[in-house]
Image 1 (cartoon, rainbow, N blue to C red):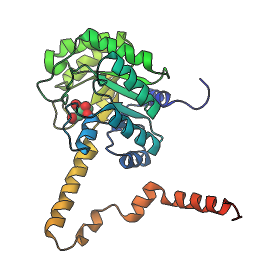
Image 2 (image 1 turned 30 degrees about the vertical axis):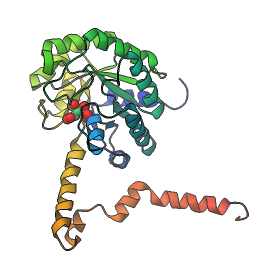
Image 3 (image 1 turned 60 degrees about the horizontal axis):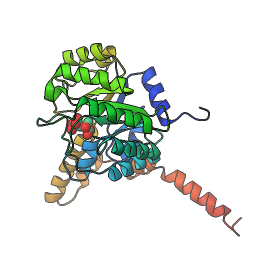
Image 4 (image 1 turned 90 degrees about the vertical axis):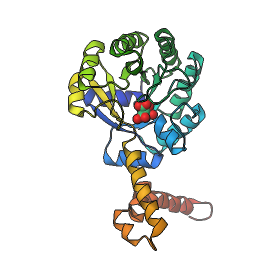
Length: 295
Ligand SMILES: C[C@](O)(C(=O)O)[C@H](CC(=O)O)C(=O)O
């Protein structure tokens, strides 16, 4: 392919060079912050998007909402975006449509999981799985639907919490055969399980280091040694932002003014800088100067 690399190519090149720390970004502004700080990629978490809409992560959000947010993030930054596509919003034909729409939105990759609809958070109990064969068919549909062969199709298996590690390994092998580029074993329960899974399945692999779940919070360097190339922190920034918002709201509820909060705040100058106010103003002036009769 000629021209500039596609988002999928950039993501692949990045993980081939380095193990990637990939933060969940709950809005385009936080994606811009991640870009500014030098992250190599960002993640749109289904749990994070649901939560930001005031909803639990149980399959309530729609493809349209996910595509809308993915597109806004892709427009706000040049970073490759990995998108949580949940179950693909239905069967194989829904998966086709999901992949086409997310690819058109500009994502670099997406993950599909083998849970039954309605899905649950991967770290809760009470999940049910579709058959491994049905999931393999969904992966095949995803692979066939992508226009860019480098769009990264990530297969997530939730089998560990339902049928155990052996079944998670069996399914992962099947999903690889079906064409998945990366395997995402959800909710493994110990460092040893991460190591065994990697040994039995082979890379590239994604590790989900979400807090307060079933998995231990392991070091990226250790995960990398086992073959995990993508390490997700889906809700870390959201959880901390929520704590900060709570403190601000509590303060406003009782205090007479908010002056003592100022040192902890992102200033107007910092916010404007992140949003590139200056650049917009300069371009506006230039266009205005170039307008008819204004030379
Ligand atoms: C990865 C995940 O699907 C997400 O939506 O970000 C969640 C994260 C979480 O709820 O901690 C999951 O692991 O199911």
